[in-house]
Length: 401
Image (cartoon, rainbow, N blue to C red; front, side, top):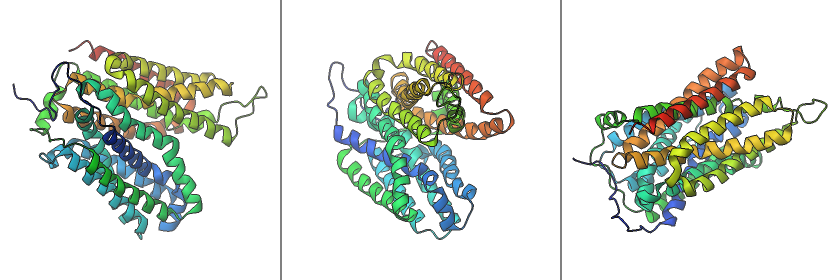
């Protein structure tokens, strides 16, 4: 039977040496991509004023990035069917650099939106190909540990990258901030070329391969569970500020102040960073367990955020736990791809990214409607229930092999 494996599998009993330089380069790329993706959120007011548009119009720079990412996830393998995946990542880092530089000098919103197309494509290409590249670096038996590095870069961006962008925008012009992000992405492109090994493209990349992958036992069911988990998370997390504003600062029932909310969000990010490291070290042996345990505990955190809002300390612990398990979800689902379909890493990676982007877009649209009509008090139970349903569906997929 022909294989589409983009990596050679190591012989049994032969341990492949970890190339930590390449893994750190992947981590830096994910850090910069996620930072650039959400950088407009931190400089929204200054950006809108500089371009002469409303804040809502400037916010569409993030929407465009997600939309392009949804399309690119399925098509990047078709557009570049034979290009070495190391070269592809190098070119995507260059595309991100070009995108940020164009934004830095763009005279109007139209050019900014066009430039963000490059960033959206780079983000999806990176996450789609990161499984194949990680497996090449670390070997299939340590795929989860290798994916941990790429995922840790994204978590680090939520903890430090985006806040750093906000800080820099306070002392520098917002255009300079984007220019710095562009320069850093260019340096990462050089590091990727120097530190990553050659990663041949899958011999066959097509929509037919993707369709055949979905038809494998348990795959479609697992992808539904994946979408439900991400959807449940973002239904709640998108409006976490509204939920945290209900938290009481003391027995007098007064709400917490803005500084406490920032601290609670920082605990969520810190939990994510630590969760990446802890779960990444053990996920290769227990990904099936975490595929069910993580969304169940995330659901518990979502319910607790709403129901236990009378205690700041409890909500702080809940925020940490929530971040710990959600940030590790990408590691879990990518490790599942690596172990369940080692001959279809690119197809599986593209499906994971499509599931993420689809869930985020649905959550943004549905969540906004629900918050405006029924309030955050009902959105959170819906989100928690969706997470539990995702855990059940993913668990069922593990039995359909």
